[in-house]
Length: 320
Length: 306
Image (tube, rainbow over all chains, first blue to last red; front, side, top):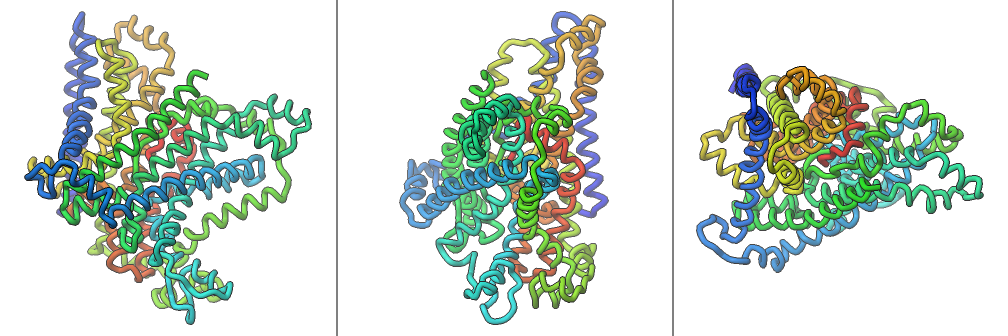
């Protein structure tokens, strides 16, 4: 396809879409009387509902069924894919890594975000500083992976380094280090990238929560002689608790599904694979769609409790 | 922000976000005294440190190949020697990066417009049209946010192939649109409900039907909300790897896929990798920096597809 053809396709797609909707809405607008509301409701809502049913709900159900079949999908195998997931040493490593990611990223990213939000609050360069820390959120995880892979670039100790990480080690008189190859610590160096991205998100949300703390509470505490640390412990933390929980759970969910970073930096090799990456590898590279579906289903199941908790917390915050 | 999925359904509520974020600047500024010079320096230093990895790669992208592979980017400060050759190399018209940049544009435009239109119509339906089963249906759409898109990929791929859409842009457009819907409907619905009932009632009394009310009363008021979600969706689609990798073909793969490939095949050609990465990063960063206000407001209103 040439570039012109591609743009042609794009405009055609948008035009078809606009024409269909224009026509439907035109017709709906003509219909008056008792049925008008029902027709309008259908025309407005049905497209979204039908697409979701076809493209999200139905595939989810199919995938769950698929996870009980073998690699090619010809034969039912019961829980075999799941037992592979929980017994083979490769897959156990995947589960272990995912657990490490989910335990480390949300807490560290939120802690950094919170400390930084407090630290930067009211400084003269606040908005610029916040923008810089937040910037990684706009960069794709692929871009972030390239940025960090360069930091981790390895050269032998003798000779010049081009990766900042190893240059710092050499400046400190240490040997250069294979950040991405040496198991199991390479997992932590991948995790750093996710923290680098998510801390900005945590900071933005928490900073808004801190700014929303009512003046009088802060004043009252100050008059009572509460010092900085006490202010954090007894005023800031309890007030922003709901926001903090939302940040933690949100980052936990994003972390559980992390794929781009692992795929780009190590391809899941050297003992660094995680569930979302393994799902891709099994489904589309090894063509074991049974195991792939089981991994996707696992991801689904893992996300449910966190989302439920998140929603309950939001409800509470809402009622308040 | 990319990969993974939706979440933080209403950070807003927790932080009193939507409203909290609209507190007038002057009020917020006045309530706390400015801190001294030391905290300012510390905070600024950390922000600069946070940016160093990015700056390192950016500087490298402007260094001649021989320098980039021989010495660290910090050496460029000692003897500055910069060139645009790397960008010229990756952007040459027959280069995969150049082609995939176009693909990313082709993918992104419909993948932002389609879900926005579909979702604003649905959100209007849920907010302002009475019909049986409305609450249950809305909760169902809301609940679909927890479905990780991974569980949808294999069956969708099979379908697209059997429809004969394999290798075209359609699978990517359709998938991005569908995956965006639950969050988009939910967020836009929240905004729609904030609009005073009298306004809609008044239009109705004047004889306006739903279509007219939607376009003439609600759309103008919802522009900021739509802009906020549009930016999200743009960043999400542009930065996506998983959907592009699964449904993209040689002809249609987006720039993220090509850059990720390049890391695998030419992992030590840092002069090219750095330039390629920045070509892919540039557009979202420009959009982000220029529209940051909308973006942060959207985030506070609970739209994070992380």
